Structures are given as C-alpha cells and as structure tokens.
Length: 496
Image (cartoon, rainbow, N blue to C red; front, side):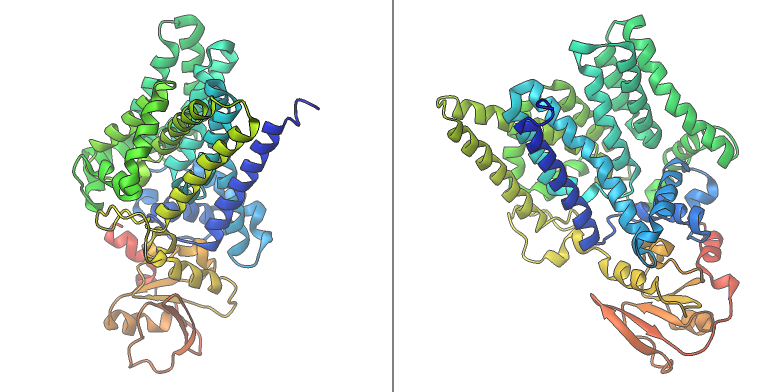
C-alpha cells in the first residue's frame, strides 16, 4: 500500500485525471471536424452497425476500409446510447472511450521519463503530454492514425526495456505494434525500423516472439476482412492499390514533399525553435523515438496527398523527447541547490511555460491559414476548435426532434454535416445546393439546415433556431420519399 501511494504516483494520478478532463471537456465543449474521415470512416459506419442508418461513402462500398475500428466504436455506441437523449449519449461515450485510450501516451511518457531522469523528468514528460494542445485536440477523434498511436507507443516502450526482456514481453510488444500496423498500414516503415532496432541479432530470443506478436492482430484484421468483404486482407491491399497505384487520394489534394514541415511551423510558429532544441537534447537519451518520428514524417512526405493528422504518431514522440530535454535542463539548473523547494519551483516553472505555450498556440491553431510566426491568435473562431461546429451543434439538436420526416442540407456539404452520427434520425437526408435541387427535393423533407437564407419562393418554411450562423427551418406537412435524391443514392451514382 505504501508503494501504491507514493507522492509521485499521486501526482501522476492527478495528471491523468486532468488529461481526461481536458480531452473529454474540449471534445464536448468544442465539437468540430478536422477532416471528414473522422466521421465517415469510423463513427458513421459504427452508427450504421448499431442503429441501421448512416451515410455510406465509396470507401465502404468498395471495401478499402477495415470494419474493426467501426465495430469497436459500434459496441461503445450501443453501451452508452442511454447516457443522453438523441445522439448526445453515445457521442459522450465515444469521446470518453477514445480519450481513455490516449492516456497511454501519458503513462509511457512518465515511465520512460523516470528511467531516464528520475521522478522530476517523469513528471515533466507526463505533464507536457497532458497539457499540449495538439494531443488534447486529436485524442478524442476517431482517426485510425490517432488510435494506432495510442497502442504504438506502449509497444515501443515494452520492446526497448533491456532490463526485463522476456518472450512474453516481446510478444506483447509485437502485438501492440501489430495492432497499430493493422489500423494504419502506412506505419510499416516505422514499425520495421522499430523491430530491427529492438531485436537486432537476437533471432530466436527476440525476433520470433516479436514477429509472432505482430502477426497475431494482423491475422485477426485479415479474418474480419474475410467475413465483411470479399477476401482476407482486402482492406489492406485494396487501400494501397486504389490510393497509391490508381492515385485516388490525389483527388483530395496534392502537396509538395516538405508540406509536413510547413504544417509544423504553422502549428508551433517561432516556438518551433526551442521545441526542436529540447527535442534534440532528449534525442541523445532516447534515440529510437527521434528516429521513429523522423521516419513517420519522411515516409508520409513521399505520398502526394498530405494531411496533418497522418503524422500525429510522431507528435507524442517528439514531446516525450522535449520533456526529456526539459527535465535535463531543470535538473542541471536546480542541481546546484539541494533545497527541495528550489526543485519544486523549477518543475512548476517549466510546466507553467509549457502550459502557457500550449494555450498561446491553441489560440492560433489553424494549419490551413497562411504561414505566420505570431505567438497568439486574435480570433478563436478561426481555429480548428470551431471548424464546422455550427453544423454539428444544429444536427445534434435535431437528433431529439420527433417530427422530422426528412432533412435538407442547404449550402451545407454532407461531408461537413456530421451525418447520421450527429443527426441520428432514421429519415432521408437530401443535399440541396441550388434552387433547382430545392424545387425537385422539397417534398422529401420538412426540415432544412442551412448556412444561408432559404429561397424566397418557399415562404412556408419558418425559422426555428440559429446557432453559430447555421439555421434550422421547418415547414408544416409530411414528406414523400424521393429515392433518386437521397444522399446515399446520389453518392453511389457519383462514385463519392
């Protein structure tokens, strides 16, 4: 009992609680979409599994996505749907579940920091991973690369611990690496490097249990493909073929090879310089994290289509290294004094500086804005915190509206609407972008969500509410189903 309740364990527990509150709190306070995949490649198919309705995109028609993550999220949705009315309950449940997974980063940061620099370094590393804005922002999001990160880091840590190498531990390490690989096949260069770095020449002692651990979850994912698609491992190879060989991903944007470095400068501004310096200091103590972060960034740089979320697995690695570097500076500067108070002040000062930096950069967090080296943002609504928040809030409010028989999206793109994940009503959705669309599909819906005023030729619609610039309109009467205008029929016909 005395070992369990050491002061540093208590402080770690407090950091974990703070981390969970920050992640869940930010997700619920600021519903947003960073990229449509977080809805339509995970939450929307999960909603379809549990509740029977959802927008089906081309990835799930062609079979290039695994059903494993949507299946897990479907279970979470089913268990937590009763936590609130409409879509509120399971949205809270999913955010809590994903945020709990992300706490692995903080635990790894703590134990790795403790091995390198003792309790002081451990607490600094864990604190940085607790309060850094990007880790808070992305943790509750249902991206495969985010979930993969939260099992990748523990897998690496377990594999490199030389003081307690056993076959079981290496098998567990390999299993975690295998899960991350199956979730995000693009991590294969980093995982190959990690396995070589960990195992080196220990063929029977290390390689066999490590490879066996990796194969186990990959086989499980392949088996799921066999039952849910046409053949085993379909989502692995077809994804690579369609997006890389056929170049489908290029339709969603092409960027130069150095784009990820621009993204990092956009996100961290001039503070990139001290962050990089601290990371280099930490690299000397944990080189594998530095190499892995660099491999993840560079390997994704060769792909034409780039999104900031793709290199999320590198971010906690970089900030653990920066924590190691910060801890080393704190220990050196406070080593001249034996006073405990001086050391506590040094720790608190470093955490305060990291927290202030995180808040400052969050206030300007928009990687799609022009490159700027400002420290503070002037308009929080221009950050990713508010991206499409208007659409999500409105659709979530309609999830408890019983008399909706059809929904029209007027000036609201379906990919940024939140889909049935937020709407939750088992009624058709219609995309209406022009007055001609409105005239043809008008009889199919009695509610409209719009970012601009409705056509004046439809005075029978009355304004119900407006939130953050997006309004809800309602007309009296019933709806008649128009199959060729329903969103899923339109997406299928257009190949989207």
